[in-house]
Image (cartoon, rainbow, N blue to C red; front, side):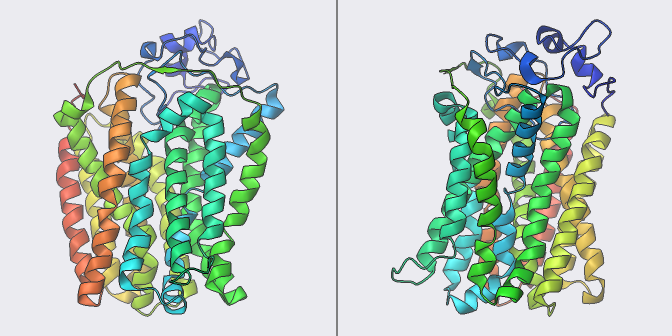
Length: 467
């Protein structure tokens, strides 16, 4: 846990060399500035930064290898800084509705749009794959245009993709071309946001990192829960699956308009990539952590894509299935809240990594073939396990690295490989369902994936460092 000073900055961070150089601390460790004007100055080299705080899950600056180091977003006063924080949290609130909203009305889409089996598999797999494909492009685009403007462009693409997804463009195949193109656009846009948003939160709010980091990660979980819980009721009210999917373009468009003046005020400077730090691709520890991430991603995105259809095939009505998935995702927030702090307290993380991996695999399998009367219990076990598993997998970035450069490299490796290979989970569930006519085989698949995640989590949890 962080020991916080009176104005909310982690005291450990405040006493660090980076905190002193950024002008945020006085000798007693208390913060001396209330805005982001004194955050990391562009001329400081990121190599001087210490490793990220241990419970700052996911808040890795993807632009850590740039020279000069990117400065914070330009704001004029406290009110504008608060407005920026609101925009960043609202962006996070739109990053998972794409996945959970589609699965909530998948049977209706399949029947009314006459989708072939292969299209269902592609539509549940492609957006996750694109998270890994487009992740490496985010820092490149940010060096050229600035992180804020790239985020603005990503939100524009996300809004366009959400609008296109249910549309019938008049091409052969009816709704299928719009679904494919819109889903792909959403996946690419979310990939850019996934990479750049944590760095902005970290740079712009060093004095409120605990608060903003918590709001940001909670918003992402809430995004998935909202998509799962509200899509079917919108369908029931409108009577059209297209209206249920179009609904999610509205909040994305609102955030796009809210963030537009912030992004346009920025004047991006040219940066160059500086390759410092350990080559993570040659590190056995880095690969153990990355494979752990792959296995958790296989289960995590399969929950978003398939849990609602699994429950509905078992006889649960659409509204209740959406509510069960939504509650399971809310419980993920609880797991993600406590797991990183608990993991950081241990001498190593072998025990917690193993337990949460087995909870997740077991909860998923029991949701498929466990007694239906206890489905809320299985979904709760899955939610607590999955939230904790995702959190500890991301926490491994900080616990297994010694500096910010290596953490950024490991984060990039984990996102590229983790999401790219993690999409095979949704692919295999779809293929097994098509081949067998039920989800039972997928239950055994996730028992195996959970066991493998426990093995690699145990190895990644040993007290060793990348390099």
